[in-house]
Length: 212
Image 1 (cartoon, helix red, strand yellow):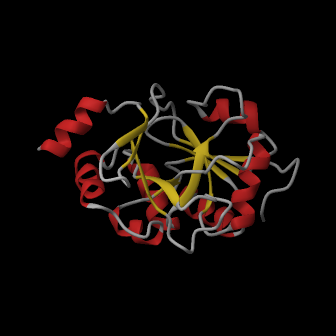
Image 2 (image 1 turned 90 degrees about the vertical axis):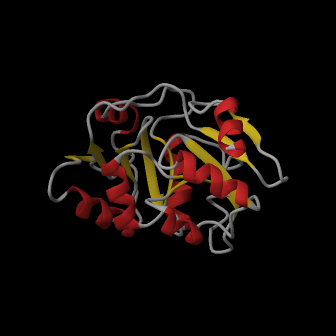
């Protein structure tokens, strides 16, 4: 399967009995799938498929210098993505996952440079059960917002198609996503939490969680 220009982008309802199996087939074949999350629609590739991940940059018109975050289905998958978690990371994960918190963790050596050329990687568990079901089936996915660079993130399947029709293999239609603020990005590698991007979770909420 895989990505190629002018591919026929299919659309399936995420509640269709064949939707997740179809998405798995596309992803394991090197293709790209857009699907709803608890923020906006994301475009995903198998995290260990370097060629498929590279195609995300091509599709979005995005520079390769910016790492692509990884979404996991549950805590059991984190060891496949990250080389470890500090006590601070664990405390924040227990408080805010699933949810709009991206933790910057040490990158597992198996993760290709196309996902992140750094020693770290951004990881999140989304708070949307259909997406969790997909991730539990596929394993961790490299995921970024399903839009062209410079354009707004899509909150509907139609919005994804407006920007990416013919560039990706499949869109799972899950209705309207919440949109709004993105996830908060936190790096605890220095021994204290450093907020790289403040989103839905505020600095005070993070400090309260660590103090508690």
